[in-house]
Image 1 (cartoon, rainbow, N blue to C red):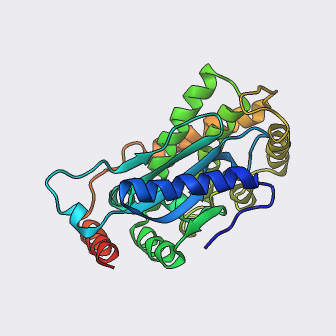
Image 2: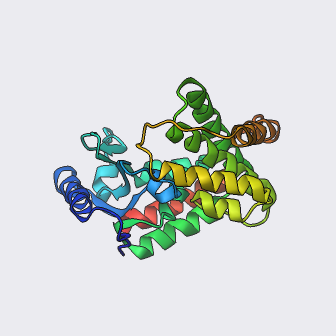
Length: 265
């Protein structure tokens, strides 16, 4: 499977894919899913946004049966254009069980460098089976708090949007309590919430501004947007901060069975 928008630089896309092939060769792994994350997939890129490629990879069965397991992350050199790194599927499964929503986001990215569609569908089944909106809320609360603190210290459009996205997701979660996994991109999130038309318009204007502003540029951020971020995080703190993080044994058993099937397959 491959899904690359026409507005992405073909030469850079090819260079990303070459990095991925080198990862497979140099580390002896199989990359089952490689996507674009970050602002491009979230719906608010800047003209100079870097390329945030993320991927899941699988070792051979014997590699998981050693007393000295390898790291569960593979990173390639980071620079102003390329941010390419990925997770061992075993790390992804552990995070899914704990309620980390990043794994599900990668599986649902609209931008795919290459991937096994059956692997994606299979892992989405696991993610949906393990999905808990309360744990998801706790995840986005913590992400939002971290990004908001960064925005207060360094008010760039990038920082504001990185705080806005988890806030919008938190709003979506309590607007759509029975709808399952939230969308990945901000425009879709906002379309499916009860946000006022005026605030949606202010956010759309800010997205348009960011699309013409350098990644670290600053811009006037309407108070209504910063107030929205603060309000959603305060509400989420009351709902999710004290959630019991204990993982149910049934979730662990399901994840273990799924993982064995992927490795043996």
